Image 1 (cartoon, rainbow, N blue to C red):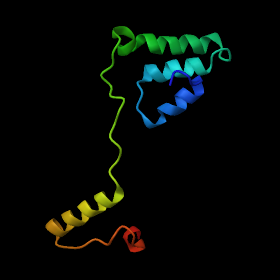
Image 2 (image 1 turned 90 degrees about the vertical axis):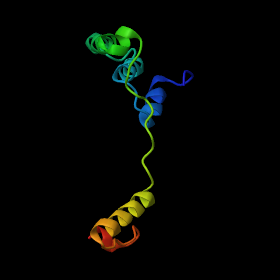
Image 3 (image 1 turned 90 degrees about the horizontal axis):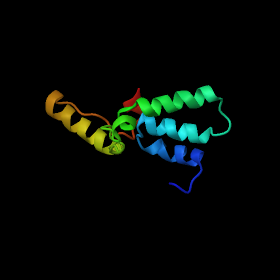
Image 4 (image 1 turned 120 degrees about the vertical axis):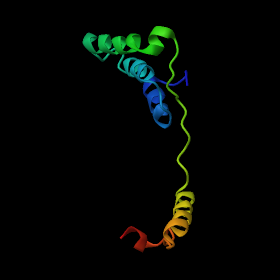
Length: 99
C-alpha cells in the first residue's frame, strides 16, 4: 500500500476496519498542502491522543469476517422456524417472503 497516493490508501481501507488514528493519519496525508493548519493540528491531536499513538499498539481489530452468504442465513432461519414454530418459510428467491 505504500506505493499508493494517500487517497488510494484511504480507499483501500474501506474493506477493513482501520483504527481512528490510522484513518486520521491517512486523511492528514491526503490533505497535505490543502488543509489549513487548524485541521492538521486537530488530526495530529487525534493521532497522538489515541492508545495506539501513545503506546504504539491498539486493541481494535482491523480484520473482521465477511458476512455469511444470504442462502446460509435463510437456510438457518428455515431450520429454526421448522424446529420451534413447526412452520415453513419460503425460499429466499420468492417475492412473497418480502411482503
